Amino acid sequence: MTAKLQKKTKNILSSVVVGFSLALTGPAMANDHALESAIKGDHRSDKEKARDQYRHPKETLEFFGFRPDMTVVEISPGGGWYTKILAPALKDKGTYIAAHFDPESDVNYYKRSLAAFSENFVEKKETYGNFKMTVFNPPKKVAVAEPGTADMVLTFRNVHNWYMGGGEEGLNAAFKGFYDALKPGGVLGVVEHRLPKNRDQEENKQSGYMRQDLVVSYAEKAGFKLVGESDVNANPNDTADHPYGVWTLPPSLRLKEKDQEKYLKIGESDRMTLKFVKPAKK
Image (cartoon, rainbow, N blue to C red):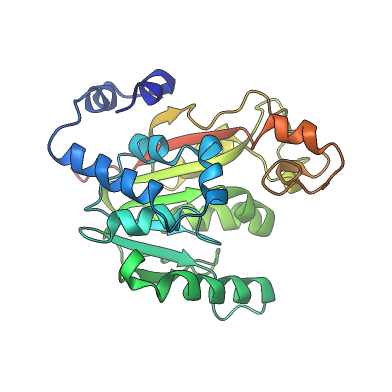
């Protein structure tokens, strides 16, 4: 465990603190090597690696308890920024499942994104392995893995999409789908743009930001227990009140040249990083 992560991470359960304080030996060393190799690999572009300073992939995945022998589901991987880290790290000993857009959707963007993902990842087995693909389209299609088979479900900056697209119905269905996919004791890792707690969520519905207490409430409603939260992806410079919401900031920079230096200085959005567990059966 890195000193940076130990400094920033607040764990809610003492057992989590104990687990994180263990030395990196044996399997932990192998885990560290698998992640390092995937993160530093030549298959990732310089532009993608430049985002590491904001997204902290190694520290984030270590916080969630990622291991290279797990079955891991990534929700809505989009263009595959995290796929380029997860799939290679899991290739030899684990299983990577991409819960991507619905191929039966009438939305052209979804079709293009899915086709590009297939071309860039599915067909490159030497780098990414024979990973699986499932469909995620809440509220109707949320069976992201066979029930009770996943060790970990990860979602990076997606919760606002379910809220914007389907409101409470979409959120409830999504978290229920994750719960069903996980084994008892399995982990749900959530990274999401954070709206300050004193802001009205409905008034900021189209901003891309979500209040952390609301995200926690939806996860707990599905049956999850919050066991840890980390500031590893926090950004105190982000005021979360920009003209085009999170898309005002990099990497989108929706305003283009206008005030670009200002938003580049802020960096990517302030983000919550939450670790939930599906309770083990008694």
